[in-house]
Length: 327
Length: 300
Image (tube, rainbow over the protein chains, first blue to last red):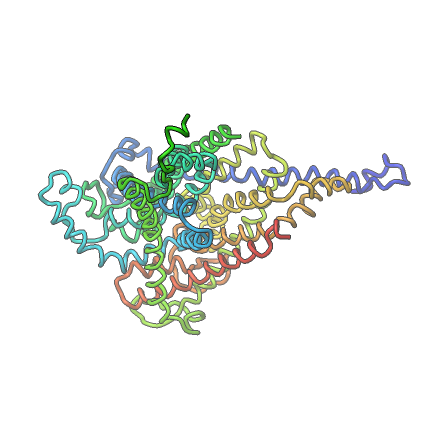
C-alpha cells in the first residue's frame, strides 16, 4: 500500500501514512454511509420480497383479497376484510382506553408529581414497556379471561334493553374476544403514548404556564388553557404512534382473541386480527395459504408504515411550531 | 385616587381558599383523575408481576435451567434448558449483527450526514422502522432467507431480531453521539487527527456508556419477541446450540407454545418460562440503567 504513495513523497517527510489515512477517511465515510443506508435497504427489501412472495395469492382474486370476508385456505378463498376489521376494532378500543390514561400519566409526571415520586412513576411506565408481549398474552389468556367473562355477561345483560348498545355488547360465552384483546393492547400502548406525550408537554413554554397561574388559574385551568391547546398536535401524533403499535401487535392478541373468522358487531364475540391470524395459522400453512398470510403481512406493513410516517410528521411539525413560536 | 376609593377595604384574598366551589371542585377532581390514570397503569404491571412470580417460582430448580423440554405437553416436571440457551444464543447473535451496523449508521447520521436530506430521510425512516410490526421482520427473513436456504435455523431468527433492533440501536446511539461536546471533536482535529480517527478514537469512546445501555435495552426488547421467532424458526423443543443447523427455540416461543395448551403441566412450564424470560429481560434492563447512570457523559 505504501509503495504506491512512496514515489510522490519527499523522503524526509513521512506522508505515506498521510495518504493511507486519507484513504482510510474515504473508506470510513463509505462504510458509515452504507451502514446508514441499511435502514432504507432493509425497509425496501421487506416491501419487495414479501410483496413478490405474496403475489400469487393476491392476483388469484385481488378484489376478494381486499374486500372479501370469507377465509377458507382449503378452498383457496382468501378474503382478508374480517381481519382488517378485527385489527381496526381492537386498536380503536385500545386507543379509547389508552389515550386518556396515557395523557393523564404524562400530566401527572410533568405537572402534579413531586420530583422524587416522579422517578418512581417513570419507572413503572418503563417497566410496563419491558414486559414481553407474550407474557401479557399469557396472563391475559389464563388469568384475565376467567375473571372478565362473568363481567362481560353481566354487562350484556344490563344493556340488553338498550337498542344500539345491545348489538355492540351482546351476550357471550367466552372472554376470548375483541374487547379483551383491545384492553390488553391498551396496556401495551400506554408506555409509548405516555413517553411521547411527556416530550410534547416538555415543549410547552414555562412562561405560558406561569402566565396562566399569574392570571389566577387553578392547576386544572392552567392545563386546560396553556398545556393542552399547545400540545394538541403532538398528542395526535403520539396517539397515532400508539395506534400503529396496537395494529401490529401479534402474540398477545393471538392468545386472547379466540380466532374466529368474519365480521361481528358484537365486541364480546371472538374474532381475529391481521397480525394474530398470521401467528395462529403459520404453523399449519403451506403453499398458497402461506403466501396469503404473507399478503396479509404486506397489507399490515403498508398500513402501519403509513400511520407511523404520518405520526412522525405530525409530532415533528408540532415540535417545530412550538420552538418557532417562542425562541 | 384609587387609594381613596379603596380606602376602607382589605386587599382581595388571592389564596386558594377564595376559589369558587365549582372551580376548586374541578381542580381537585382533575388532580384525582390524573392520579387515577397512574393507578390504572400500575394495576396491570402489578397483576403481571404477581401472577408470573407466584405461578412461575415453583418451577424453578436446578433441573429447570438445564433439563430438556418434555416432548409431551402432559408430562409434568422441569426443563427449559434448550429455550434458555436458544434465547441467549439467538439474541446474542442478533446483537452481534445489529449493534455494529446500528452504531456505524448512527455515526453517519450524527457525524457525516447531519442535516443533509439523505440523513434526514434515513432518520425518519429509522423512526418509521421502529413502528414496523415485529411479525413483519419475521415474514421478511422467512421469504428472503429461510425459503432461500430451505432450512429453519436459529440464525434466521437472529436475522429477524437484528432487523428489529437496528432502528432502535441507530436512534439511541445517535442521541448519545449528540451529547458528546463539540470541543472534543475540535480538540482532536486540532491535534491533526482525521475525521475517522476522531470518530473512532474520541467520539465513540466518549459516548460508549450511552451506546452500551441503549444497545442493552434493544437486546432486552428483542429477547422477549415471539412473533419473528415462530415465523422464521418455528416451534420446537429440541436442544440445539448450533444456530446454523436446524431449528432452535427460545423462551418466548415456549411461552406461546405452552400457553395455548389446555394442560396444567404445560401451562406451568409457560409460567416458569415467563418468569425466566422476565428475569433475563430485567437483568439486561437493570444493567443498562446502571451503566447509563454511573457513566453518563455529563458526570465525568
